[in-house]
Image (cartoon, rainbow, N blue to C red; front, side, top):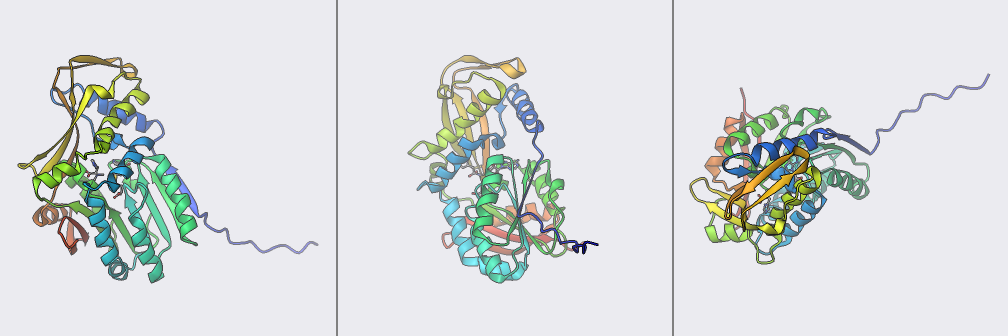
Length: 336
Ligand code: SAH
Ligand code: AVI
């Protein structure tokens, strides 16, 4: 008789990617266009900026002299990552709106140095970013497993795999500020629902400051942010067979001091009617009419702690850069 070979343990694959956007993602753009462009005050949600070109433009924004948030957040991470790694003891990092995970490396390095890092779970609507980032990271961190989730963090958080140990959920860049107050609290409540007893949330928020500094950050002299803003029209043209000419719109970025948020808008340079072929929809624009494409809320410490508390979380650390431009908050579920 042949000697039988004992069963070999099957190693978990270094990369697993789940997509939750097949078909539904396109539907969400169609619904958002139908809903947003037929309102008396036209509006499109900012998540549609980020096709591969939009993601590239966002990366260029992060390098602009006027766009301080990325640099300020990186300074905080570089200063505090070791302390965060020790305090959380995280074996895995879940990142919402992970993008290219450029700043995330600072945290991964610290968890790696602490000897706890096992798994990274990026969650993003942009498929190419999740896939490319997973490939790059397994090369950079030997032994790291990456479980990517291609999905919308407003709808697909339940698909995040269960925790395999203490977990740090990170939501960087100030992306939480792209939600208006009501949805922001709903998103934060859902994030709180992801946190177990040993888990933490690390969240980036841009802080209220001088209006000139804020408006320059969203209206740079090279016009990169203007192209990023117009990119949503290119996405609608391609995905829904629309015939917008992005050059028919001016880029507008204004600070609203009452709401303490930046509003990005596209303002029609002339009167025209566009066709969205896929929806059989005609959209009329008067000259000067605007579409709101993004809000980017700026926070005070009270606003951040209020939003966290409303979502059932309590602050553990409030971390800022030396110029107090940006804040990172470490929080956890509040005791019942
Ligand atoms: N975290 C990175 C990228 C911020 S840009 C940084 O700090 O630099 C915002 C990112 O969130 C983009 O990668 C975009 O694709 C993603 N995103 C925006 N809305 C989303 C949504 N509703 N669900 C999932 N990802 C989203
Ligand atoms: C991703 N998000 C936090 C950026 C922001 O600053 O609100 C998006 C952005 N919009 C224009 N510039 C950058």
